[in-house]
Image (cartoon, rainbow, N blue to C red; front, side, top):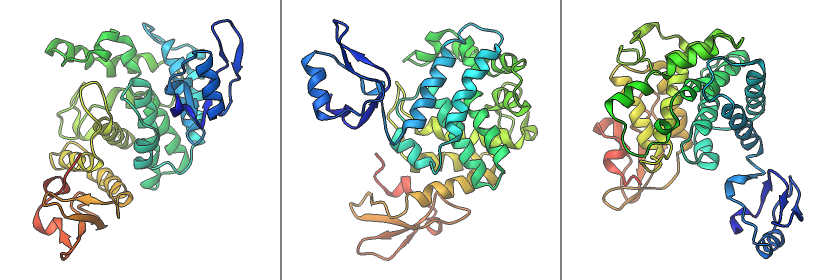
Length: 329
């Protein structure tokens, strides 16, 4: 319960005898925690929101409410779109949120709601990084929010199954881009949003799905795909722990080398992520302490390290990556 201190309640809290204990919007203090304990009222951390992350949490709750109304639908109503656009508006107001701060401060377990919010914010962030205008950034935010909407036409057990999916189940899940495209056709949204739902698993080398369309993937969808991959690699789910940013950056760069992702998008994004991680302590495999002191434009996954008691280590010159020389938790 002490974890609640400093958070804001998302709703009124009553005792089991309907006594109002705390009002919605209350910032929880030690006194409030004691009061809740006295009445044996338990509140999950997820049911209150950090003041710092308020707009994010409000958007997440708005999106959850909208998404829950979509199960089994084959067509979006005007009310459905209006509810989801409320979440988009809340997210659009968030400023100065970087990829690292997003994943460290407010990202938690990998669920469909949070993943959609994260991908929208990441795509918008990448758009800004690449110099796109505010209108295109807003479309990227929408594309992230709606990109996985087709999954609401899948059986819920497929989304929550802890064991590996069978081949048949994998093929079923791969239908969600088509489901999403069809669901969005009458929603009155920008065409790029529909393309994002349909093409976010396509790859430039033709290895993606549903159509394997290679270079025809539109530019904004390419940005969306990078945001989607980064969030998926970094997020916890029921099968894995959260992955290091270094692993995510190297993974994206490897996908560029394999021809699947757009280098002109991935490299600037990975460079920005690595620059956020400069000066952070890194433990090398030999036990020495190090930190990133320079990130190379074309090789962000192979930075220059300052190593205690040694000359700087240029990973690019050595043909190494941080994963190969450091302890990665």
